[in-house]
Image (spheres, rainbow, N blue to C red):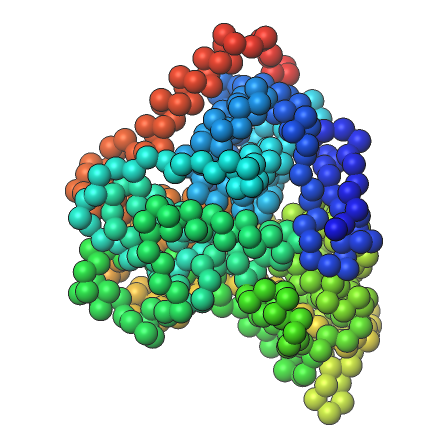
Length: 500
């Protein structure tokens, strides 16, 4: 078990982490839980704002305020039910959300005093308490409707959508091509970040609500959309996620030793690290380069470090300030000894007899902003240099999984994404789509939010409801958030005012 590094104080920074010199030799979880005393103290820092912007910043509108209110009082049961109402993967998102990057902790008004509430750590404590100590009943379900929905893809978007549709009383069957549900959360997020027993527990809870999951079935190959509709499904919701990696044409990219970083992560984690270690599929050597600046690039680097104990360097063509990766993960990666080389980009992969031996790198500078507003990297003439290496892992971005739309003829947009209208309907009657397959790669919790929104539209379509009818969440918000948490803020506690 990893050594525990005690935080100097409770709060978002610093938070408990295992010793980097120990953790980099294995796959146990990096971030460590609060004690009960710590979590209650941290929750009590919450101001119980009358206008909880933290909830608005959450893609699944999780009742952050209600959770903190209950945890501060030591009422973990109430805390769990408040966050479980709209978040079907409470333990997963507690660990996988970059809360400080435009989400709940970023919106927390306590940041004006230097540190937002450590919402993710509080949420994790509540989720782990329920899983390990006191299993709670599921949210209430509505009466059976007789309608049947097929959800294609058991990733975060599909799981969130399936659970909400089931709660509305529809029969739901999820089709997943892999043997284990979870999508990217299963095969793309390392165990040291998300222990897989957490995900599996929450998947089993969804099954327990009556959602049928059929794994090992690739829709578009083993069965078509038309067959699903003719075999009893009233509606299909496609949530197949991101899978198509960005294609590069750098000279030498097909040399042995240049690997797809996303495929590498999937191969290591899809059947469990223990199984992978019995039959390793990659000979990475000791000098490893990882190309990319996102979370997946960091995960590829940290996984390679754990598997080899070698020298791992992340190559990124912009500066650290422009990296899209979660800054907390960047810090953890540095703590473990992974090196970073910025303003650097591969120009060619070199090696005799078809085997990678080195990479010729271009030195970059930041030029004018591109279409997204980010400054475009440009090569500096005459400043190329060579880096010797045994292997390279490429993690420079993924687009939507294009297989199903190409097979079925669904209308496609940018990067072969599925085109949907404002109601999440595709070009095929009775077929809806949501999540990364429509937007491109995004966060787990954002995909879940997208899936829930699509599920709401599917429910309205099936039941022929007005577009503005009250959803389950709106009903919960008005009854629980306003009545319970707000009244508690006004009358049960000493007044706390937000900073000016």
